[in-house]
Amino acid sequence: MKRLGWITAVFILTGILPSPHAAAESAEKASLTLKEAVALALERNPQALIARARTEALRGKIQEVRAQALPAINLNGSGLRWRDPSFLNISSFDKIPVDFRDALTVIPSNLFDYNLSVSQPLYTSGKVGTALKLASLESEGTGVDRDRVEQDVRLRVIQAFYGLLLAQRQLDVTRETVLQREKHLEMARARYAGGVATEVDVLRSQVSVANAQPELIRAENGVRQARAVLNSLLLRPLDFPTEADGALVFAPEPSPDLAEAIRQAEESRPELQRARINEREAEGQVRLANAESRLRLDFNGQYGVSSRRPVNLANNEFTRWLFTVTVGLPLFDGGRRSGLVRQAIANQKIAELLRVDTENSVRLEAQTALDELQRAQKTVEAAQLNVHEAERVLAMMQDNYKYGAATTLDVLDAQTALTTARWTLLQDLYDHTLARARLRYTMGLDPLDEN
Image (cartoon, rainbow, N blue to C red; front, side, top):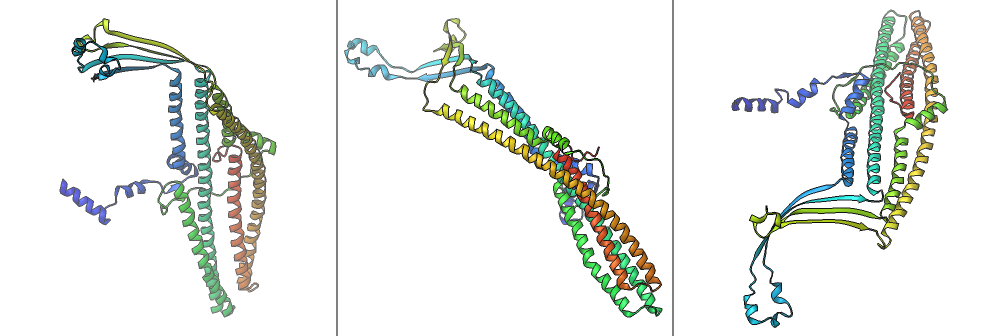
């Protein structure tokens, strides 16, 4: 068995057998829909995982703060052995009669003790309750932060997914253009062989085919780059053969008016929710700082046994107990507490201003997103018309060329115009798709949801 293991390891190292990591990669789907890509990114994205872990950490923080209001019970035990000659060092020791002094011999002794201690805050001027509310607010804020991170991941994946889809469709258009130019070259050669075309037509067609090759290379590089961007979001190797399974479709839909978009954004945007939570937390910090200067009442108690000899640890005669109620009222601390209050009030003002600033930013984003969607919709409609006209012109030029009514230059110009129109339409479809997603994102809705 050991020999078989060594042989397998050698095969893996030499590349004869696939490694387990490579096998896991090959098991993943290469072709992904948008929903699958978003789900995979949310499952793997480090920022999303960090946000979820922080949510769990805050739950533990709430439990920790809540414990401050509950009794703390401890079982304590100790064993002590000591020798203390301090009696021999008292200033009046020499006045003790000699016979009595000789009888005083300092010897080591033991002391064993075990007890049950209880401590319970009775009154803290609202300090514990405020701390608990602050922890609950921060937990709520962490949940909002997680939602924001996941929204950002969704939008980035949507942009990268449609970026790859755009690059794939642009590559298809470029390949189709190359094919059209090659067919035209064949037609020009045939017409030249038949004596109805000049050598210039053939040379122009050859140059056109040659010029299309760099465009094809750029389109292929665009696909690789777009794929690498999407793979990085999915935590895949950059060269993983991911394919975007979808289409750039023009699906115009009624957009909300500005007032509705702003209302929805103010209600749902995670940034605004977080700003409001921060403002409430700042108010709680002011109350917490004020509680530092107020009365505090605590209870402490101990009950146990203390004895020099272990045999007496079960003897009720050696029972020891202590119960105390302490009252504390700070009088002067050099201004520390007043400094805490001033800081809390300033932070409360900062939180309020940040919330106002966030609200203004969200309103502006809503206006911008609506304008961009309307612009993208109009440009798509114009680009569709341009493509339709360019296709008609190319078909007419190709028919005319067959009968000698058009030149090679006319056909090449029509091909270039059609390619440009198709590229423009694809880019406009991409912009319109992202504009819809960004509008939903700006309104605090799931950018993936198309319903």
